[in-house]
Image (cartoon, rainbow, N blue to C red; front, side, top):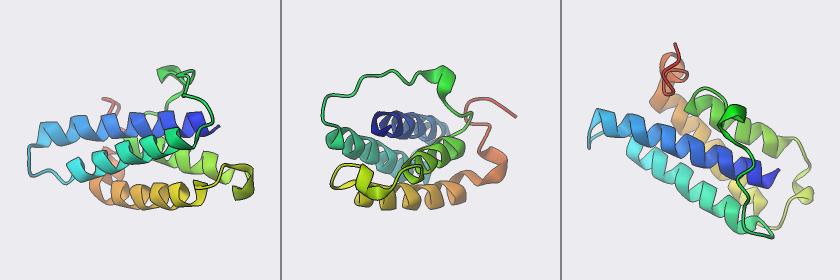
Length: 117
């Protein structure tokens, strides 16, 4: 499950990065993309083994906001003590990213990052 959280965070980072690049250097998406990338790295560091990318694009939500929401929902699906030490910090980081993404992407743009209406 932690590998899935890592994959979702990595995907959200890429989606936001693409949108931020399209908006230019002054886009508020650049720090958000970096934050999601760092959270993905943090999730990977909590894994007992190197991550296997078995959670492909067919399993990913349509937009960055939905992807971050899915990562947060996975974290809520188990008690915190079922995860490795250090997970509580990652959960807080994901919640912060979700709040930031809600402001940056808004509800209209959330599904359009992957080209969906």
